[in-house]
Length: 288
Image 1 (cartoon, rainbow, N blue to C red):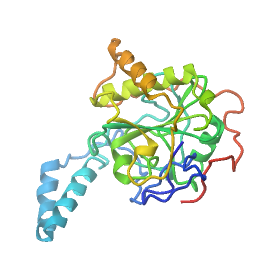
Image 2 (cartoon, helix red, strand yellow):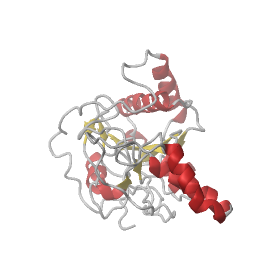
Image 3 (cartoon, one colour):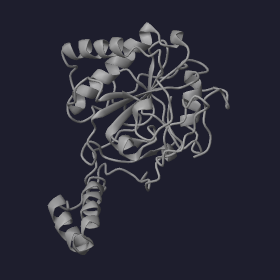
Image 4 (cartoon, rainbow, N blue to C red):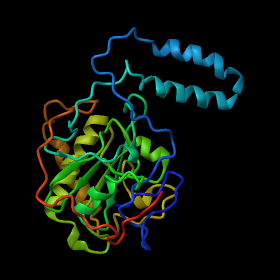
C-alpha cells in the first residue's frame, strides 16, 4: 500500500519502503457534523474573504497563504458543506467500510481542494490487513479505496475528504488513493479481476474530476515527492493498466457521474472473515 507515517514524509513501511501505512496528516482534523437539514443565513465566500483580507493584509506574502487557507475553510462551514449520507459510496458497487476518522481529514473536495491525481498503492499484505489497519486510529493513515484480488472494492474514506495515504500533504489534498491487495515482489498478486476493477474505479475518478488518464495524473506511491516507498513496484503493468482505464473512458458514462462525487448506496457486507487480518504482517507500518 505504500502510505507514509505522516505528511512530514516519515516512512512507515518495511525495508522495501512499501507497506500498508497510508500517510498521515499533521493538519487539524475536522470530523465535526455535516450541515444536513440546517437552515442558516448563508455567509458569502466573497464577504468572508473581504473580511479576512483585513486580518491578513499586513502579513505580506504570508498573508496570501493565510487568505487561501481561509477560502478553503469557507467550504467546510456547516451551512456550506455538501449533504452527506452515512454509508454512501462514490463508486457504484463498492462496499462501505469506514476507516477511522483519525486517518483522514474532513474536507469538501473539489470545492476546497482540486482533485487531479490518483495514487496507486500496494498493501504488502492481504485485503483484511488493509481494512484492519485503516480502521485503527493509531495507524494514522488510510486510502480512499482498497481493491481485492478478486475485484471487490471497499471504500473507506469519501472522495470529499482528504485521506492520509501519500506521505505528502499536497498530494493527499489533491489525490484519491487506491490500495491493492498483494506484494510488490509477487507478480501473481496483480490479477485480471484486480486490474479490471481498479481501472473502472480510476476511469470514474478521471471522469468525475476532469483530468486525463496519463502517467502525469495517475501515479505510483513511489513517485510522490518525499516518499521512500516503492509501490506499486516493478511488476505493476502500467501500460496494461492505462489501456484499461482509457478503454473504460470510451464507454458511455454511467448516469449520475459528474464533477461532484455521486453518493450511492453501499453494495453490502464483506465476505466472511474479511476484517480479521493479523496485526504485524510484513509491510504493515505502525506509529505515526
